[in-house]
Image (cartoon, rainbow, N blue to C red; front, side):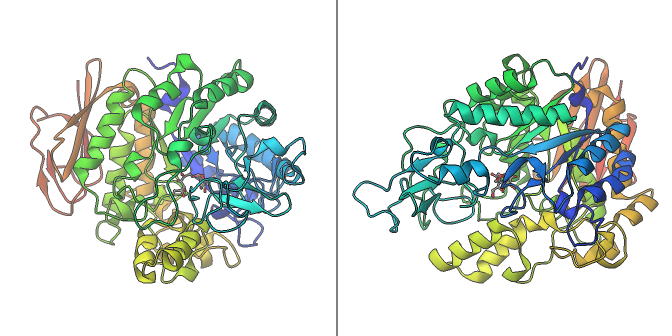
Amino acid sequence: MTDLWWKSAVVYQIYPRSFADADGDGMGDLRGIIDHLDHLAELGVDVIWLSPIHKSPQDDNGYDISDYQDIDPLFGDLATFDELVAAAHARGLKVLMDLVVNHSSDEHEWFVESRSSRDNPKRDWYWWRPAREGMEPGTPGAEPTNWGSAFGGPAWAYDEHTGEYYLHLFSPKQPDLNWENPEVRQAVYAMMRWWLDRGVDGFRMDVINMISKVMPLQDGRPGAGQAYADGSPGYINGPRNHEFLHEMYEQVFAGRDELLTVGEMPGVTVDEAILYTRQDRQEVDMVFQFDHVWADRGGDPWRVFPLQLTVLKGIFGRWQAGLAEEGWNSLYWNNHDQPRVVSRYGDDSPEHREASAKMLGTVLHLHRGTPYVYQGEELGMTNYPFESITDFRDIEALGHYRQATEIEGRSPEDVLTVLRARGRDNARTPMQWDDSPHGGFSTSTPWLAVNPNYSRINAAAERANPDSVFHYYRKLIELRHNEPAVVDGDFTMLLPADERLYAFTRRLGGTELLVVGNFTGETVEAEIDGWDGAELVLSNLPAKGLTMAPWQAVVYRRA
Ligand code: TEU
């Protein structure tokens, strides 16, 4: 039996600036979250994870933190935060904070000191390097390595004041902290203990497999047609990453019960994930891997391919098998960095949106692992109909557009096509609460436009309709809470070569569940024997055995 509470839990991610605006400034806030906790309690989730609410210049919507121990005035203050934690706990909801410590803001006092002089005591808290040998500092190509940054441009910024460069894997306003320095690590651990003492229940750790860099830092191999090289072999899963996370466990988590820690780890492999999540190694409880959200792109993140279902099943099958005995999976389709799954792997047309949203939810939630629901996913919210680049606010979209059109010579229309499919702002449009102006999100113009489909797709309508995506997600969550086979059952993939159906079983003791999802708009017969007369547990459309209607999902049980 499961002894770890989070194995039967479901986590709900809140992106605070887009969740609910209580003070009418067009930006979501903590009071707005408090006001809507009953929505989450009704859905039945166990944990909420808040994207960053710390003090921040908001260059990357809060993933650039200038004070780790204060709340940004956009969102509220510490007193309101305490109230939110108490209100969540009163409803049996645990609260996870985002932990963004691969980098800070350049406006954090640590960095302000660090950049002030070469001999400042905090100089070594960040990655300062001289210009490439023989090159004039500050000239093109003089950067210490040829790495590109995630949001376009080089990964190094030249600082004239001291004549050196600092490393930023993301924006120039997100300098990377130097985890080699033990003082940095101690400062981070003390800050984490401070939040736990305040009552939070754990952390989602931003790009936490990038904190250890391969030293000395070295050039990467430049790809064809790309302005900068991929430096990731130099910073993904570096040599001291496990050591740092185990040290963090010992200094922050040891002796504290009932916490949940999840490491966001782009590029993590199954073998590494086992090491990160094996409980006896004391690192983290689970990781976010990216393989299944990179299934529709090549090595180049800015190319979009149609989904091949066998590829997706291969990925999930590998992760399910790899972490079957040791470690634990997290399960997600969506977060604030990914396009809406119903638009991506489903069909967001009026005809199939609800069915495909429910089918995708079924397939994901019936895997072995801890599911994460991203705000609005439970309503079947869709991608946004972006018309031009001026509709985007995301630093990644704007940075990529600039680099691709101005430096790499790609056509603006091609770049926009990719951004429409892939852009992070698809996930960040305001939550659609009801059919009043601005979708009930705010009384004034929101910071990012509300999807015009809010009059049809919104929480009030979903809650009122017993057949809605919302109530279907509620049942999926309830099923995880009530059926031990969903939590602990063995996973077996069926029909691995089928391009239309996603099918698997879960078995625990004498109970076996069969899950089938139709990833097409056509009726497909599932050729799976032995399930005649099995009990129907859940279906998004009227069930007819294993004749699968367009986008249908079924869950059968036999004992
Ligand atoms: O994301 C890390 C990450 O690797 C990606 O998902 C990222 O969005 C990248 O641009 C891929 O296209 C985390 C956060 O979730 C993201 O919002 C932040 O922008 C990033 O770290 C930096 O803190």
